[in-house]
Length: 253
Image (cartoon, rainbow, N blue to C red; front, side, top):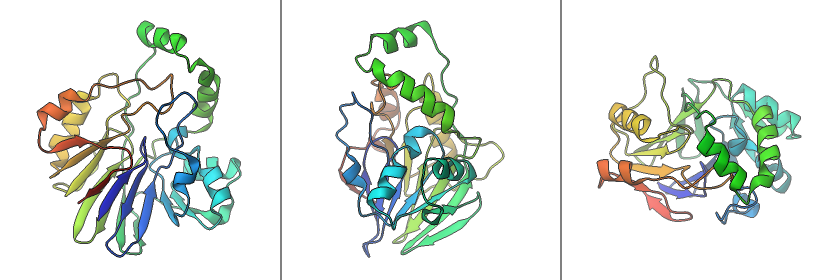
């Protein structure tokens, strides 16, 4: 099984038989230096959504217009949001926590995840936003953040293929009342969403005990609300086990 990162939480998986699935495709907002374009998401038949926030679903209507046969699998809240945004019902497949999904060579379990606790506004954060050259994105961001809800529906996906297990998290948090798979061959860990991402990342890694970790969602794709992140604490603590994903690079599990 191969894994390719397309920025933010957008992760592609490819089986040895050539089957492909894609998680959370998103085209960065104006002002980002992350070179991901809408055409990078052409040609996929299957897209899975981890949750309904705008940076996980906002690009889907245009992807569907360009790829009218694509199937998007998501929970109820993003399902309803995408319908309102003009995605045809025939392109949407409703999933629920606990579902097992089979797509070609992939067997995928949808487990109830949990979203990160987003940081509150602070003087330094507001100052950073106001000084950013991407200040023009603020109204768009606030509107889409209001429209695109998560509603406690974040999905943690366990993917089995080619004798390997990979876990895909859409947000950096876990529920206390849920049993998650441990010792997976790969954990894709979104290093974002908290005031300080290091403590929740450590809690997650210690609970799941994966053999290998790839970080995603750490890039600056919707400025001015994203900003450069210091990955060194997590890279140093789990040296040899964790690495940051590189845009477009193929990783083999």
